[in-house]
Amino acid sequence: MRRRSTAALIALAALTAPLATGCGSDDEPDPLRDQQWALNALRLPDAWSTAKGDDTVIAVVDTGVDPGHPDLKGRLVAGYDFVDGDDDPKDLNGHGTHVSGIAAAHTDNGVGIAGGAGGAKIMPVRVLGADGSGSDADITQGIVWAAQHGADVINLSLGESGLMARLLKGGVLNDAIAAANAKGAVVVAAAGNDATLLQPYELETPVLVVNAADANGQPASFTNFGARNAVAAPGVDILSTLPTYTAKETLRNTTGYGKLSGTSMASPYVSAVAALLHQRGLSPAEIMATIRDTAKNPTQNPKLGLGNVDAAAAVQAATPQN
Image 1: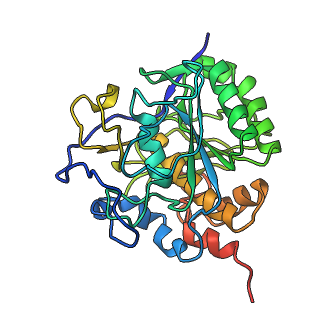
Image 2 (image 1 turned 180 degrees about the vertical axis):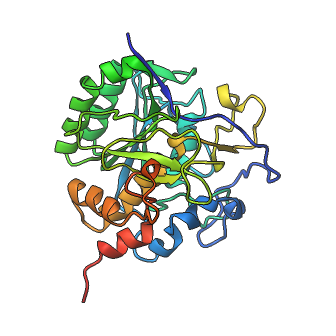
């Protein structure tokens, strides 16, 4: 059975701020917001005055989620655990909780961080185990299940590399992504972290592949590249939520927050932008086209694909002009 794993480079950073225990209230600054350089790089705050992803469900097909995290409470809709075969997709790794916070943590609630789409909901779909790996069969089922149960955006922060990946790129995941797209879901996928030129999906597969960039807008040293019509987003030292209990990636950090690097972190930022555009009424094809058309790559660096995503420009392009 072929295995896939989370596409993150683990580098947990201890934070000076303790874990918040309350849910805070609206319109209070998030205390860790100043450490979230990626939000400004994406120009997300400029986009929030128009859209925050309201009435949008982002499925995080990953290791699950911490259902009791104070920055994710109230952000979750019902999900499923394909690893254990039950309705409790609890995160025993940490990766899925981190990805979920990037996409849609509570924003301006006086607790922790700000999510990219503060009005969206997260659908946790657990397809990867505590070790961060899982089978194509579970991932395929998770993608299709998410689309059938109302996901508007599906985030795949998964990684796979090497010769076998190249040989099997025409496999079942392409069909699952196409089926999800046909149901009305935008599928956003991490490029992977092997600094490799790679076309991970069949060319006709309707998927938005995301490379990782650093704080200077340059390609991250680890990012894969080469996927047709890929875009780039921040993926280095990204602060987000982590489980508030002991899990594989929280053995040395129980603050509930930490920094990770990887295309896994870049992908949910783009999923958040997709959620903003979904609120504006765009179709999956229009969402992908708008994100691609407004991406910026002034130096034409091939490792950035079409360029760095610009949330404000994308929302502006999706706003009817008087």
